[in-house]
Length: 325
Image 1 (cartoon, rainbow, N blue to C red):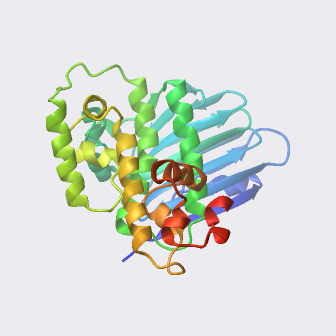
Image 2 (cartoon, helix red, strand yellow; image 1 turned 180 degrees about the vertical axis):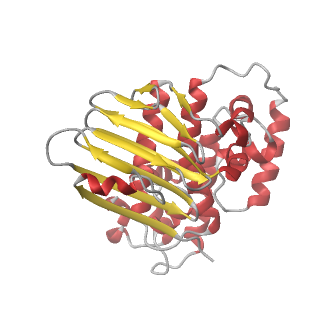
């Protein structure tokens, strides 16, 4: 049975549209800047987990008193002027932690864009379990501000926007495994940004590379053809992401993300070879395996297998849909 996917994108014509700035909550909003407010607001909901991305062209005052036990983790994507949350002066790519039942207070002095992830506090351990400093739910019960490495932050911000675009183009429910992959992909953008702001963890163990790889491959074998996110491996094996990178680079000469991408490409190749043209599409299979940029996916696929994915599916050359991606 599929997992319900909610995707809602709209244009804003007035500050009232920002009352739902974060999916599932109400935000009190007052316009500070002069002029007619224009903007956009998109929500992605995967079960009880959600991501909201919004933008607006004038200064705003926002206030929210949490009435539930949800955790909100927000990222400032762009800002043309000062942005203050609580006592924090924020710059683009900074991350803000808004714990359950804590009042949120923000001032945007000009046009801005943001992303906000909303989830159950109980999910923190399962999503960030491979990173001890993020896996403890108690560490998320305090409001906090993280100033990320700018390069890491820009990559994460761009990735969040692309994920929303891709999920918005998907018609129908997600499989349970695909929903879990996409949820982890969103959470990773926030997590990697927070980790880049923290000092190196000098207490991390460094188990042997080949022992780690053997455990990873056993885990992947049990997973079969479903997409596996790197954070899932870190949680299941209790291995920090840095140790995973070291092990994969030592044994395979590539990082774990590249290795997992190759594995997903192989899974797609096998699915397409066994499918009958007309019963599925390349875009559907790629989506279920966690690829959110179909043009880049087609490039990866052809570079690896020497043919377009539609050719593997058996679509006549004149009808290759890949050329339209």
